[in-house]
Length: 406
Image (tube, rainbow, N blue to C red; front, side):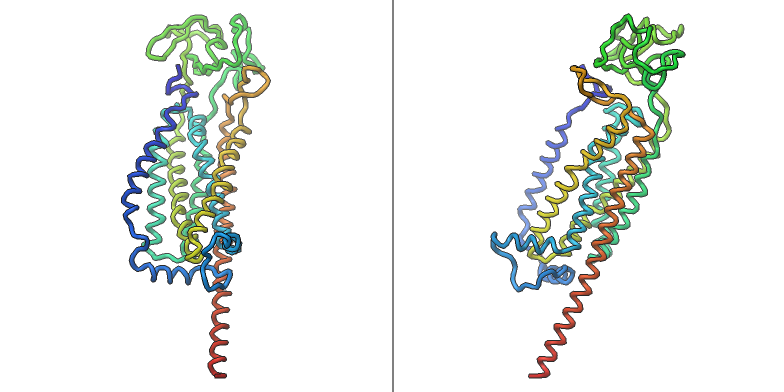
């Protein structure tokens, strides 16, 4: 039976979806009572039109389905909108990839149980995300930021999030694993098989982490050379007569069915920086949506949001876990073999040093791209606004000339 202390423990992963679904349903009820248009909507729309990037001068909105290709083409010609979406893709890759694998990374790096990791991530991730979202929306409201100010806010928060992601440099040493990174006794070669356990005829696909009293982790009680066991508490086993473990007369057992404890003081520093990384990342959540609505015409906002949602999912949230998974697999030092012994199974030993540094490199790379896309969006927006202003001046001059002629 798998317990929460076991590394294979998954838990009730579906429970969060049920809770969130109920909350969303409850919140949707009062939203249904809101009017189709809020008070002073004309003034708000007028101010947003002045910020929109004018790609095509047209006198009426797209109203029919067959005009969808034209509307989409016009939307994709809006360079500010496109670069905001590309920045959102970079953000989506980081959020989806880290959201999928950060619990595993923390469990491996700091030798914690999956149950402890769930508590830790709940205390860090939820408050940081909520505070970041509220802060992003609050800054826009407090300082009445326009499109330029919103993108500058995104640029600043991206830089701070990138710097905070250096927290992944805080790692702990890898576990001492007999036959994997430390030899049995005074041997010079690394191998799970040793004369001390050869009489046991151990199965390589029977992975059951066992900690010896020498604080060395063994692949299983069999590979530790243990011949007898006793149940001392609920799901806690003590193993005796372990020929691969140095004897200690002060204890009546030689190993336990759990991972070894290695003291490490880096976890608090890591969690503090992860908190700020998530906080500054989610500061951009509301501003990105707000900037999208401001840089397009009012009759294109629904299409713009739908397009942004699709691009973010296909370009960010889908490839994110794949990229992070490939990177994490690359720092695996030892794989379990599947039952047919022809294919690799799951990884049971990672290089903690390079795991942390690979995550930092990946985070810095995508954050740098995100920063570049936000900067390009701001640059293109300023250029388009100057062009629009010049065209308006020319149009006014032409109208004045016509008036003088008449």
